[in-house]
Image (tube, rainbow, N blue to C red):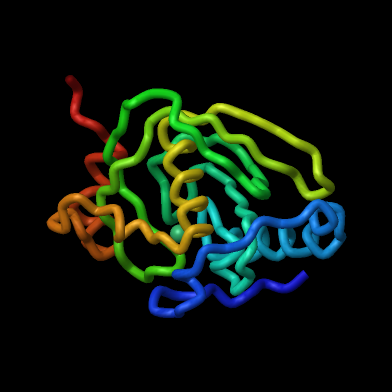
Length: 184
Ligand code: NI
């Protein structure tokens, strides 16, 4: 299974709504192969999530592997997920703001508001129906990836552009505070 090229902001297909996988496609080995490519490409790039349109396939499938790594040393581990035809429902009105970046937008981070608590209904490759709840950073990562399926990027959701930070400056000015939060 090959590592695929990641589609970057400015590519028109990244701004399209991706289509649902059909019942026949859910059972097709081609979907399992696509998911393998997504997982491999995400791992090679050091991401915590990747959506199919980011490798040039405009279908509703995303993968996540939420655990601390070089790009996100400050997050809590939540494990690996494959979400096909996901449907997200906020569980409360609570929202919170936190840092995000994206493999399709090089070198940039910013603070994005997201639902804090989420119900997720989705399918697995093969067709099985699943549902789960997600909270905090995992809920954030799922919302970010599923936004890709509607052609939405995190920069579209910024409420204050003054948080925009290049990666080196994020590591210099922001990360130390995230790794060693001040006692309250
Ligand atoms: Ni992204």
